[in-house]
Amino acid sequence: MPRGASKQSKTNTEKKTRKAYPTIEERLKMAEEQIDKLSKLNASRQALVNKTEETLAARREALQSSSDALKKVLQRKEKLLALSKRPRKSENKPKLTPEELTKVRREALKKARAAREANKEVRKQEAAKYAALMQKLKESGKSMDDIIADLGK
Image (tube, rainbow, N blue to C red; front, top):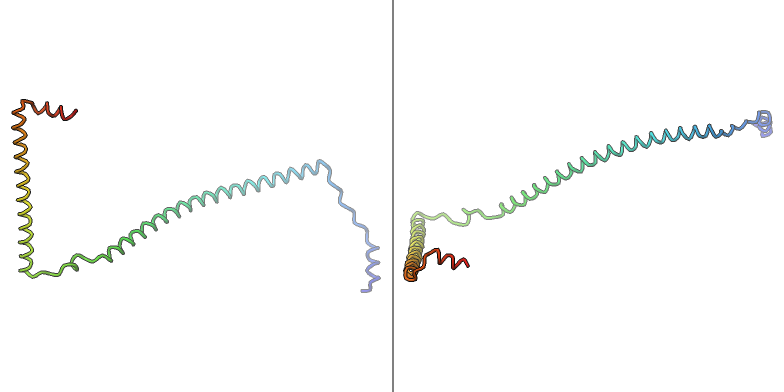
């Protein structure tokens, strides 16, 4: 198309009329519509935020409980590892022959008798001290209640 032809087409068409500027009442009406629209939008977004916060709180609780469970399992695993590294009781002691076993038992019985004898001696000494204390108590003429009261002061 020649350039001159396009200029003619522009001059032949009518000029577009501008849209009239809205009046104050129309602008107030548009502002109220925008306010309603934005209020609804904000309300729906606030509802979504509240719902998301509830979901987040529930997920945090679930995360906390699963973290606690994980800690317990890790502690149990560490305990089991420590137990598995410990030597067994049966590995420490070799199996004894019947003669060695009777010898060990006799030595244990001998130690037990010696402990019983020492305990008897201690009890005899304590009985002697108690008898001497009672003798001194009779000689002094005081009663046990008097001595207890004196010791309590």
